[in-house]
Structure formats: C-alpha cells, structure tokens
Length: 178
Image (tube, rainbow, N blue to C red; front, side, top):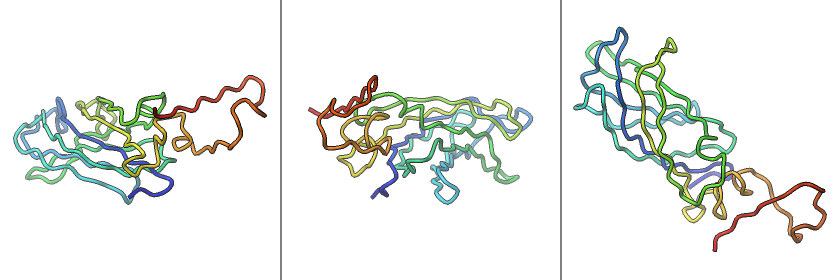
C-alpha cells in the first residue's frame, strides 16, 4: 500500500554492459544492483553469476517513491574474493519518466551511463520504468496522466466550472479516462 504522498514505480533492472573493476579488469561474475530511493529504503537485485561484464538481471521491483523525490540511485556492485566492490552508480531523475503527459502505465525503456567513485565512465545499465496506475492503489497518475494530474503535482482543482474565475492567459488541461 502506498503512502498518501508517494507513488509506486514498477522498475525492471534489465541488464548491464561493459562493466569493469578498477584498472579495467573484466568482471567474471557475481554482480548485483542496489536501488536507493531514500537512505532507509533500499532494494537489492539477485546476483548474476554467469554473464560477467554483461550481466542480465531481468528482475522486477515495486519501488515506493516519495512525491518530493527528484531522483533514485542505482548502484551496481560486484562481490569477489577480495570483498564487495562498487562498480558504478547513477542517479536517475524522476523527470525522465514524469515530465510530459504519458498514458496510464506507460512503459519507459531507459539506459544510463554508470560512473565509478572517481567519476569515470564504467559501463551502462538498462532498465524499464512504469508509474503504476491509480487503479492499482497508487497516488500518482490518477485520472490517467503523468506530470499534469493533481496527484502528480499535488494541486487540487476546485469544484467550479472550467473558465470561471481563471486568470487571463492561464490554461489548465485536465486529462481523463474515457
């Protein structure tokens, strides 16, 4: 169940590409992803033990995102005999999938460049994101929109008729399901 000021993201971590450890050493196995939305809210993917520098996770998560959050972090890690290492991370802006109007449950396929702890390029992560519809108990996207709805922006529309008492030059679009 979502909190009143949050939304549910259906996040699928698909795969990684060209991942290396420090010194351009190829990764042989044991890569996984940590999804961070807040300091206390982390989710961890299954470990890929077969595909080395080109891991395939294909794992789906339901991530509870606060409405005020502007990004979430994906951190790719590798476990080997020397310990647990951060391969790279990326901050995914929420605006990449909520900025414009999209239909309810629109599926976004995204790829991001990972950066290591020194800020150097270190591979790519592929994912898909879907903001769940209000029919599934979600506050965001209510009424079939993203970015323009009252649920997505936190604005409440009055009960008056459209066009009455509206300042000159302001247009308000209210998408609805039909």
